[in-house]
Length: 433
Ligand code: EPU
Image (tube, rainbow, N blue to C red):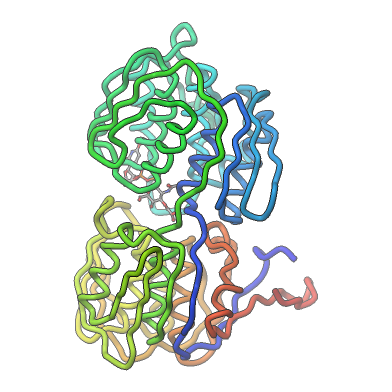
């Protein structure tokens, strides 16, 4: 049954208790999968989340001649020996923002790329001018025309160079890194983003024989190498999925032991939860979040590039602020528009007033179940949290967004006591997931 056609139905109001595992990181996986093109060899990627954005990345690879073999649910063998700098179909790349990594990877391997402009969640204008500026600094001519982007290196060879990012961009940093890895000479990216998926992508490339230092800091140095080779590589855990479960424990007044995490990546989220009166305990590769009967305290949050509070946790933390005593302020510091979910949350009784890029949230003791939409990936997950915390029944529509980024979400939540299911319209015989 096609999950994108279903609706999530939740009967909320119960504390969730138990152990919940975290899958591999979506935003590392999509970058690493597409960057395997650079190796001209076989790679085995482990801990790959089984989500639609990753499966789309694998389809994009196949469309340019890469051989993809699923070994099991979370392991794939990717053989890019016979990749060609072909045109990935527009209907594939336009579905996902991260398809832009195909440009950097093709440039790095072939010295040229021709790729459809990317899609993804709608947070207002999502330019890729800084990616283009970076490719140009490496000696490429870049044209954007008719929904496609065409980049060609002079004489087919990219030249290492200095690239200053005018603003911190995750995708721009990774894309320039991909293009530079096999360039002639050294590239230095300044004002680079620090996100853990940048470090994971650099670690993967270094394991393949690249020479990248400084990933995770402001300055990344890439000494170009002639060739990369295949490896077996394990993707890091998804900090946003982990953070989502942390908020879920607090919002439902439950206790969740969230396993397969890197607690350091969760520092900004743990700090806000502690400030709100929620207990957070780290233990090796797990974190336990417990709220009990204590009321939540108001708090101010501003989303920022890593190590700041993640923008991809904006909708989820907003649900918690909606349940905290007093007036909290949530300011979006990365995307122009990330608050399209606010109207949905208000249908569940949340009291939120928008003031520019700040949501002023007046907490209430309980949300009430309602019919809502998943307006994008993280917003959709916030609706799941809200529904599980709320009294009564919540129905969530347009749930295909959610399955772009959360593996086995329904089963994971049912295992910790959630009353949640997916139902399908009559035309699809009301089969349940
Ligand atoms: N920006 C520019 N020009 C550019 C690139 C970015 O002005 O050339 C601006 C953007 O408009 C935005 C800011 O810079 O205001 C940051 O954008 P960034 O490039 O860092 O975002 P991204 O790489 O496209 C990734 C994640 C997003 C996450 C952001 C910020 C992937 C595939 N996506 O996007 O994840 O919100 O970084 O952390 O890695 C999600 O997983 O739900 C998601 C949307």
